[in-house]
Image (cartoon, rainbow, N blue to C red; front, side):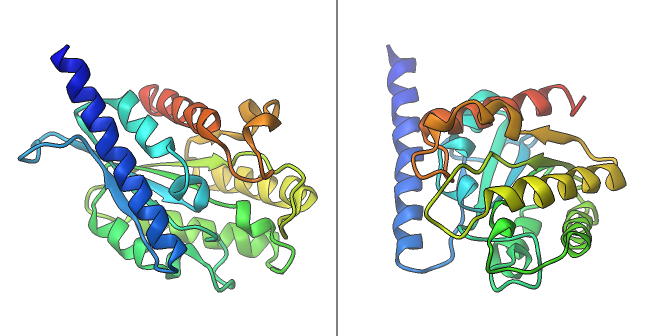
Length: 231
């Protein structure tokens, strides 16, 4: 009974953090936050996970669900910024956000990057070569940290027909192959979030953002990759 109450309180605190983050975003302020088990002191052997991404990271419960799967020996930092891109040439490049510097100061042991969806915006004109170079540069920034994190890159969740400026055709023809090329050039583990969610358009009410069930599937897929060491 006591365990159930503690679990409920922990979940409530996590949800409050999510609500606060969403409210700040709606006010136009760049934000990021940490998801961790409430405790009075840091654990010396705690493993730090940095979730890097756009609104698919910032605006869903995926980091919370991932933390619940990983357990108490982990701390999960959510560094998702809505609308952010891999490409540096856009006005929404993730590396130009405050979250980028804070994520490095966090000195993560594991980094999970879910970026690329907003690079399919028809208003942007970056080339595949530029996208690849910018992604590899981003990875290198994390690999240069003293914590020497294991970096996981991902094929982002699918794009379905939507009322925005994100092109499903461009995403599939350019973004996904470019991310595969980044994985090939860097030799890093590639987590496929695209394939398992492709058959679940019902999880994407607006064609772009996964709902609660979609977030749970993202978290379980990432968790499996981390648990297996990316194999």
